[in-house]
Image (cartoon, rainbow, N blue to C red; front, side, top):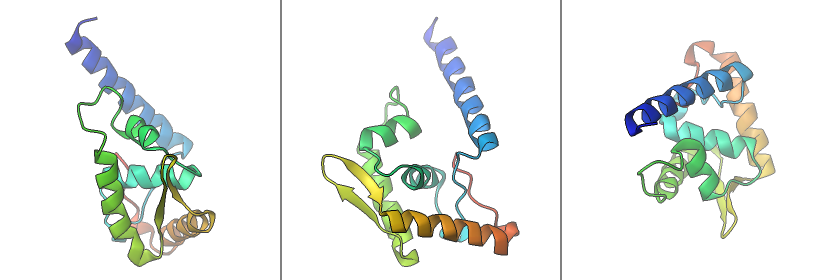
Amino acid sequence: MNPATQSCELARLRDRVEELEALLGTRTVCPRPWRLTGREAQVFGLLVRHSVCPRERIFAAIWGYDSEVDGKIVDVTVCHLRRKLRPLGLEIRTEYGVGYFLTPDGRRRARAMIAECEQERPDLGGERPG
């Protein structure tokens, strides 16, 4: 398979995975007032769904192993995400050598905040990670 065909096929598969994740409800929809970018929402979704997320898992899930982006992009995205979540009382912690995580209480609170926002203001919808 030539590189152009391979790239098109990879893009098609990623689109299909996103469709399936949306249908299965495995994608986190963040309230618009949080003003998260698509990538930030994707990282946040991983942190809500998993007890600990190593940098490599986040990078592979969002940018892909074949990405030409530097792996430090995860650290930068988490830094921006921390700034946006801190005023909401949510803290992303780091266990060096293990990964990033929300405390169990933080994960519960994040889920409750998302659900509350969706119930109170369905027009706010959410930022679909993309």
